[in-house]
Image (cartoon, rainbow, N blue to C red):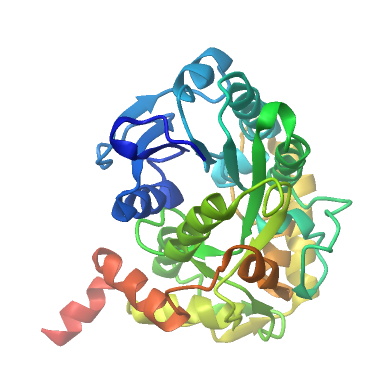
Length: 353
C-alpha cells in the first residue's frame, strides 16, 4: 500500500464509521498512529473524532467523491435487520447490494488499492446446525431472511471484484457482535427483560453459538488490511469469532443477570414456538398488512438463530493475517456490562435502599 497522505500516514475511509463497529474501527485505526481516517455515513452522530462526510451509499457520485485518494476502504455500513428494516427487501438490496457495488466501482475508479468488506457469518446459515464450520461451507442456498440474502450478494460482489483495476478485496464474517455502544443486542434484550419476556428458553437451551467482541472484529479488519497482497488475503473470506463458543441462552442470561434482570429459565417447546412464529410472520402479518403494518423481531429466522448450533472456525484468519482475539469473552462481557449500567434494573437500587 502506498501512502497518498502528507506526513506518511495511510488514508483510510470507514463507511458506517458513526455506527457500532465503525466507531471501534476508527478508534483502533487512530490508535496505531499510521492512519489519516475519514468516515462516510448516512448520519453524523457527533461522536466521531475524525471528519465525517454525511452521504448515501446508494448515490454513486457521493461514494466516488468520498473514496478519492484513499489507500484502504473499510466497508462496514449496512442496513441492519432490525424492526421494520428486516421486512424491507427494497432497502436491504439498495444498501447492501447496490451500495456495495457503488463502493467497488468507486474504488476502481479512484485507484484505491484495498477494500475490506464487513460481511456476516449468517451468509452460510440456512436454519440448520453449524458445527465448527470453516470457509469451505457453501453459501446458504435458501437464505433465512432478506438481510442474509443481501449480505451473500454483497460478499460475492466484493470477492469477484478482487483484481479488478488493481483493487484487492477481502470479506470478514463476524458472528454475534457485541460490546460497548451496541445499539441492538443489549438494548433489545433489556427491553424484552423489562417486559418479563426473557425468562423463557426456547427448546432444550443447550445450543452453542460463537459471539465476537466488537473490538476483536475491528482488530481483524486492521490485520486483514495490513496483510493483504495479491498473493495473500486478497480474494478470500474469513470467519471472525472470539473462538470461545457459549450456550446461546447462557449468553442471554449473562447479559440479563449482569444488569439485574431475570435469567432465562423456563423452557418452551421448540415446535410450538416455531409454528407460532411461522403463522405470525407469514399468515397473520400478511392478513393485517392492508390494515396495519406490524414490525417485530419475532420471526422464524430469529427463532432458528436462538435454537440452533452456530459455531465457526477462525483458523484461516489466524494463519493468513495472525488474527487471535485480544479480548477474551469474560473481559468482553465485563466491558459490555459496564458500558450499559444505565440500563441496569432500577428495582435493584430500590431494594438496596
